[in-house]
Length: 345
Length: 187
Image (tube, rainbow over all chains, first blue to last red; front, side, top):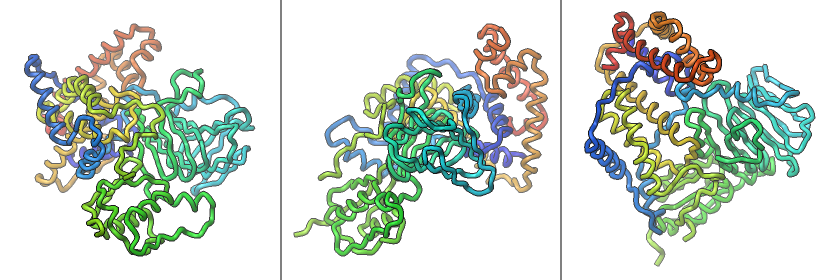
């Protein structure tokens, strides 16, 4: 039987890393699935509508807006386990979208210098304005020869690390398919691959704004909308198929203070009977990441350890283990849940 | 206590997505039906369709701080579509573990066979219908782009696409060869 193969086909398709042939086969198969939907009466519709709605409500505490909403909201958020990747596989045919790659090409101005990294290893290149790029193998970058003018605009296909020279007068834009990244600070990664998978921007230092390319060829670039602003250690994925941005944290957040100054001694994280809240504040400050405690009583907990060497998420593991709490990354923030400790007498 | 406040999503430059419950409910009420119908048409199972719509909205509510959706309708449809495919995946998977499915044929060979099956089915379509279908499905051109290119009214193009889908379905269902897999999976 070829069920196993068919499973593999669907699996690869959903993982978003399939070939054009596989994509086309799944799409053809999907197109043939349709069967007529039986007619329903108004009453039947109303019954289904309510049944599904009640099931949604039962699944999560979706409370009406009240001043305490946040607190409860975080509580259920902590309990929730359902984190489904609403897929980043591509559905070009379904949405009848034009290929983002060709879209980029057609929107590019003429007279661009194009550089392609044909090596097997990442390569450094320096742009005329002094910005330094680390291009991954197979990555292509195009830019106006002088990079002059009131805006610095480059076009990326592939994955690159940008270290942008500071020039407040002339903002720096990276165009990747449907997405424009405007640099408000210094260094970050952009990944916009050649196929239709997601575009991903991760910020190392500074601040960038990521938004959709405005519609219409002549619309001014200033009309940036539908975008997110990212600071250090945050990342955003843009999906071509859903046209949605999803924010989160990078896999291994780095201290923002040291990476901004280049080579610096690693900040020490040595705690001796330190109040939990102070530990959290130190982590927040040095990683530029927001940490939320869902229980006020956690502030009374004390923590003793040297966690200087560990990556952020290991630090949090150790911290949480010590006070019998758990943490999870919710978007660009970290939520810590636990019962806390009794207040000092 | 500083940390217990709700932090507004200041990362939103232009919010396209509602976060309060009332708006959330509004989206559900407005879209549930077409999403449900889409899921029923593709899965042929009302219970599964209900589950899919429910799970989608639960997920949206949970992720509402993280999502910035510019085209809500297409977001909803693509999400339902993904869940439908996942549903089939799970069904095949549960079949796999019980059945003795030890010797799977070569995967590349399987892909080629499947492609041949589709191509042969395609060969049975009237020429014009096939051309339009290929432009639409394989080259990814929209109906209006095809209409421009072939100098035909959009409605005619859409008609051919619908016809192609219907006929393909018939041909593939009656097919005897490798198409057994579809029959097993789909019915």
